[in-house]
Structures are given as C-alpha cells and as structure tokens.
Length: 270
Image (tube, rainbow, N blue to C red; front, side, top):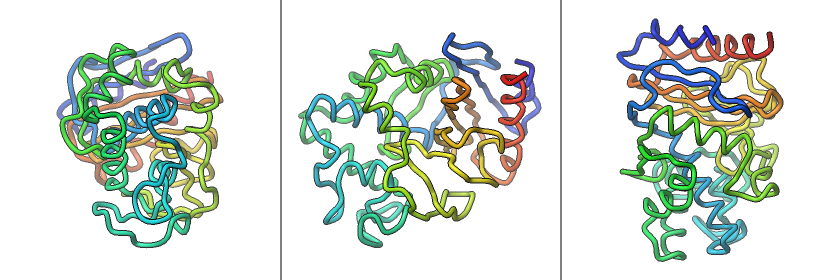
C-alpha cells in the first residue's frame, strides 16, 4: 500500500508500519524488526494476558481488584475510579472513565499473585510465545513498559482480528464497550462523551478529533502510546494497522495520524 511510504516523510528519526488483514501482512514499510518502546500500546498486550488468566480461571472478571467495589473488568476498562498514576481512588467505580496506568499495574500484580508467575514471564508465556513474538518484552511497568517490533505487533494484530488465544466470547467481550455511557479523557485528545472502552482497547464509537480516521467504523478498537506508536483494528473492514516511531507523541502527530489512517482506509476501500 503506497500510503505507508508516507512514513519516510514523517518528522521522526525512525518509523515502521504494517497493514494486516485476514490474509496476514499485506503491506509493510521500514525496518519491521527494529524494536521500539511501546508506551501505552503495552496495555493491549497486558490486557490479552489478563484475559488468558481469566480463561485459565486464575482470576475472574468479577474478582475484586483495585479500590473498594472495583473488579478486574473495571481496571481493564478504566472504570475503577483509580487515578492515572497512583493507587488513589478519585471516584467510585463506574462513575467516570479515568484512564489509569496504575490500574494495569494492579492487574499485573493480581495475576502474578494468583498464578505464582512474575507477570512479565506470564505475558511471555501466555501471549508472546504462542504468537511467535520473539522481540517483545515487558521491561517496565505493566501500563507502559513494553518494547516490541512491527513484525511482532503485526502478529498480535492478527490475533486481535481472529483470536487463537481466547474463546470467541471472551475475544468479543474485549472489543465490546464495557460500562457504557461513561465520560472521560483520552490523554492528548481531550474529553469525550462518552469515552468508550473495552477490556483493554479503546473503542472509537462516535469520537471525532481523534487519532483514528473519521471513516473508521465505530467498532474500531486499539490504542496509541506516548512513544509515538499506535495499533488499530477495524473489525468491519477486517483490517488492522501498526505504526511504531521513536518520537514522543505531540502536536506533530495531530492531525497527521488521523489523515494517515484515513489514507489507509481509502486504499483498503478502493
């Protein structure tokens, strides 16, 4: 896809990307084996591992976790009321969509406690090894501390398109709006009413002025990271995209990302 060639002109030192469909990787650009910091794209990987733990019955979506009254599902969907970067509750569960990296650290601690396996090792065994993601490692906090390559995340995008790690019901729940109607902020993009989220991924819904394209289906889901990274899946088009860069997210990325993603959709739809 020629739109990927635009990555060469982005204001970054290094960038790589891939387009994935049910047929696998249909286009790629740049060094897809280069390892980048993922920042919050990490949460997609962590959420998948937590859902594997749910299916293995190590934990349950209703298992209490985080602040009083919150559960695993609340933490996955940023509906627990936890603050962004501390285990302090800002509100009761299901009152507001408060984006919380601390919630993902709590999830990792819970899975480690219930399985007896360090969470970085659990992520490797539950997600990375089965998918052949050989360059992916969680080297820091569970909310933002993973590193990976486009080659690995393209494999992961294929998993999000058609899951082999989870049952159909759990995979569908992951990309379905949880605790609908909650308002909240998407870091860097402002407040959305509502701010739809699944069990890990952000869901586009009716959002505009967003990192996804205007033409993305409302069911599009994924995540972006402050490291200048993003991964989205459009289940209506049966397509996904991964882009990794080495420049921190900032004004340079808006509206560049949205326009770039629109270009991908235009080529898919043509």
